[in-house]
Each structure stands twice: as C-alpha cells, then as structure tokens.
Length: 243
Length: 90
Image (cartoon, rainbow over all chains, first blue to last red; front, side, top):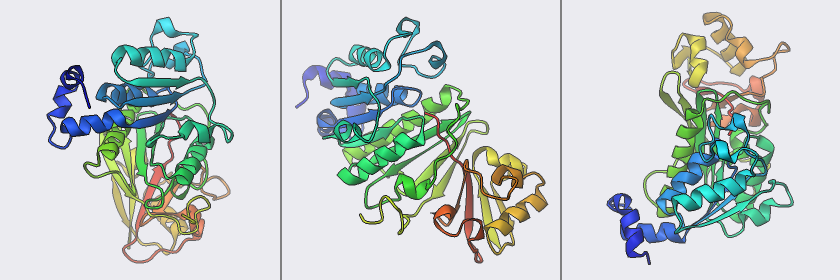
C-alpha cells in the first residue's frame, strides 16, 4: 500500500493510465541494482528514486573528483573526495526519504557480483568498462534477471534491454570488448541514455509498453538522430546459448 | 545489392547518409565498396592489416559478424548490414 503522502508525491505519474495507484505500489515493492554511480548511474538512480522504486542498491568504488562533475549530476563541489556511494546515498535520501537506498562502496568482481545482484528485479548497467559489464551479463543470465545495457562516447550512446533466454545477451551483441581508454563525454549524453535506461526499467517493472528487446537504440547527439539496430541471439553464444 | 546502414557519427563517412545500397558478396567486399564510394571509410572499420577494429561492430540482419565468419561472412541479396561504434563509457 502507498500512503497518502506518497500518493501526492507521485500524483503526476499515477495519472498515467498504465501506472495508476496499482503500478505505484508495484514500483514501491521493486528492487533495482544500479551498477555504477557515474555519468549513467546519476540520472538512472535519480529518476528511479524520484519515481518511487522502493529499493535501490547502488555500487561504485570510486571517490568523487572534480573531473566527474561535468556529467555526474548526483554530486556537487562539496562531495569532492567523498566516496560516490556515500554521496549518492545522501543525495537520493534527500530526494526521496520514502525509499530504501543501499549504497555499496565496492567493486564488481567475480566474487562480489552474485551477492550484489541478489534479490534484485532488474540490473541497470552504468559501468565504464566491458569486463564488469560481462560479469553483470553472466549473473543476469544465471539468475534470470533482466539487464539494461547503456554506453556512451562523446555525443553518442546506445542502450538495449536484455531478457535472459529471450533476447540477445550482451555477449551476443558485443562478443569482444571494445578498447577501454578514457572516453570523451559531454554530460548531456549519459543524461539522455541514463534517462532512457531508467524509463526501460520502470516499463519492465510495470509490464507496460514495448521494451528495447532485441533492439539496440543508438543515439547521435550531433545530428539528434536515433537509429535502431535489430539484434538476434547467437545460438553459439558462450554465455547464453545453453539457456 | 545489400543495404549498408551507418549509425551515429559513422554516417559522416557517407556524407551524412544513413543507408547506402552496395553490391558485395561478403563483409570485406561491402567495406571495400564503401571505401570506393567514400574514400577513407575503410580505415574507420579496419586496421592496417585489414582486421576489423575492436571499436566497431557489424551486424548482418541482427547477427554480429564476430560470431559468424568475420569479414569473410557472405552476403546475399537484400541483406541489411548495420555498422556501429561500441560505446564503453558510462
């Protein structure tokens, strides 16, 4: 049940036919893993918290630095030097004290990923490297948890929604890891992609709309154009063929 | 003929065009045809040895060519070939 105060807080989205009070209650009961609290993790976690997702687990090992602040809108000058997990938790609690925020200041590794994903309804990719993304893909497949990929570079980015056993997994889409050098990023780019990832997560939780399943949405901010690439599962995929 | 579709900034290679119709028997031929029509295109996709760059992904009707026969993957009439850069940053 949602309280009268919550009904007021979420009034504008409860007005959406596909959400209503019932959908809002569903959001309140949901549990989401946000892997990374950087450029993508900032808008993802802010919008999921604002929407009333009941439980957010946010993982990031880094501390806030000045060069983060062009895009990582969870933070301000006062957070420089503080663990991102700690600063993010504070910011999200200020935004919405009615939800549960669990911030983990740690790394996503083979040893930690299973526990981090434990009892989550969906995993949001907000990482900056493919080795961690492949670990998240593995655990998503193993535990049958949907996984929303997002990645950016410059004024471009892409996202897709991976449903284990039903859609192409991250390894089907990107069999090998692209180069991992520090990429140029205009802050609004992860803003755009992160918002779309948050929207996909909410759609999945509420079972509404058409997901980006087997569709890679590519955004080009230079020309303000979206392209959609159709995707198939790889029947010989090393990660998901047996599912 | 096959349809080569370029996403994002890769369209710059084809003077902003999203789609280019090409005659090609395989992906390497498709890239060579693009190079012929738009000089400089090939070096955005391949290294000096002619291998596909790690930063580029190519899909034939939704299948990544790395899981097929790479640049030698054959093409047939009407195939859709999508070119995209992989975005790793977050």
